[in-house]
Structure formats: C-alpha cells, structure tokens
Length: 347
Image 1 (cartoon, rainbow, N blue to C red):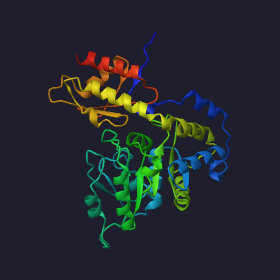
Image 2: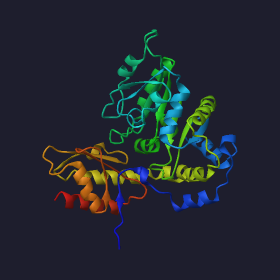
Image 3: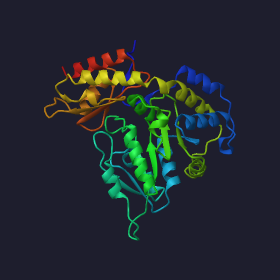
C-alpha cells in the first residue's frame, strides 16, 4: 500500500473538508455580477463583520485582492510604499505596475516583520512635480517571508495613524491574518482596525479550495467591484465556491493554534540537525524556514528531492533555504514522520 504523502510545501495545498464539499453541493447560487448570488452575499457580509469593516468583495485569489485594492486606492502615476520582501512586491508578477501604472516604493522589512516608522515617514513624497504622489502604504500580516511573523496591533495602529496624518490610505495584505491574530491572541477586527482595506485568503490555512475576500468601506468596495470587473474577476454562479468560504471562515479560523503548535514542534526537531540553522522561538505561526549551515552535507534542493522519495514534500526556496508550512491536513504524527525522514536524509 502506498505511503501517504506529507505535503509541507505550503498551506495552499489544502483540500476542502467534507463539510465544505457538502456546502458546495447544496449552495444556493445566482449571478454575482448582478449581485444576486445569496451565498456570495452572505460570505462578503460575514467577512466584513469579522474584520470590523463595512463591506466585502469575494475575489479569485489573494493576488487579485491586493491588485484590486491598489487599483481602487491609486491612479496611474501614483506611488505605493510597501516592504521589499512583501508578497505584493515580490510574488505578484509586478501587477500593480504592469496593470495599474502604480509606482512601487519598496522599503526594507525587519526580522520582526515591520518596516521602521521613520523609514515610512521619510518615504512619503513631498509635493513636487518631479515626484510620483504617495497615495498608499501596504503592510503584510502575517509577514510570510519573515517566518510567518505576526505583526502586533500597536505597530499596525501606528502605521495607520502615520498614513492618515498624511492623507494616505493603509492596505493590509492579510493572506494569513487569522494566523497572525491567533498567534497574538488578538481579535482580528482589532488587529486591522487602523486599515482602510484588508485582504485575506480562504484557500490557505482556512482550507477552502478557492478565493479571498477584500474588505473596506462601502465606498471603497464599490470602487473595488468595478476594478474586479476590469481585471476579469467578475464571476457568475460562484456561490458554489463561496459556500466553502463560509465554512472556512466559521470553522477553520478558530483552530489555527493547532497548526502553530505543529510548526513549532517541527522547528524544534529540525534544530537538532547540525546541518540546519533555525531558531524555533521565531516560529510563531505555521511557517518554518530553515537555513543550511556552511558545512551542510547537501544542498536544499537535494534534501527536498531525497525527502520526496520518502513521502515528505518541502519547498526548496533556493539551494540554501527550505520552507515547510503546516495546515489542517498535517497532524502531530505527520510531524514526527517528517522529522524521521529528515534524519534519514541527514543522519
């Protein structure tokens, strides 16, 4: 009998639960572009309520949600301040520039997932015909490229205050905002209270098969709905997907601490391998980054390949770094099996 594969490459590999599949099969649907899909309308309203905003918009992906948000906040030739390791800057195909004509102004992100307030303040453009006008500050929480680090409410509030004092908007890429809120033991609405708009993914740790939600004011979401149409995101009887999103929002958002515990256990086990440099104390959500030491016996890609042969999949970011992400379908026994496989590869 084939051994079950333990897939730690990302929480995007999650598959819908049986409850989600039933909800999808039984979903009431309508034309969402006409605003007539009752299941989508319920999801958007519930998402807005949970995050303390007025309205929501169901979109196909987190990338689409961030793009639509930027297009709704900014015009062509405007500027967005964001982190140099942020998902929007690094991994969204340059969409804000290519499709929106929005100029990105990247700033260094610290190990705690923050951008220094002084750096943000200094990056805000003065009124000058030579400069692109600054319109938007974008933060990421949890900070995926920094070991999934949750960014605390006090910092979020401080950036929001800075933005609004200069007449700017604050957008939060909250792909894993429920992971961040869980790690911080903070109500998610309180965590993003200072933000003018927030995206969060249903299809990562929340386990739905497709989709993200963008939330903000009624006026902002009205603009965003038009921008979603422009980028081809107007979907029709999409309640079959929103139904899974409702289950994700109601059930999966409250169980993420288990994933965090599994990630910490994995990090603690990997820290015992001499080839690896990892601080388990930095693992606070569901993402584990491993750096290979200078005397490592194998490169990251070779390690990932050898693990695959043993039924464990991880992501080699390059030849020096490995990423592993826990999620609903990873149990504590899977972590122990994965650690055993690592020790077989690097005895």
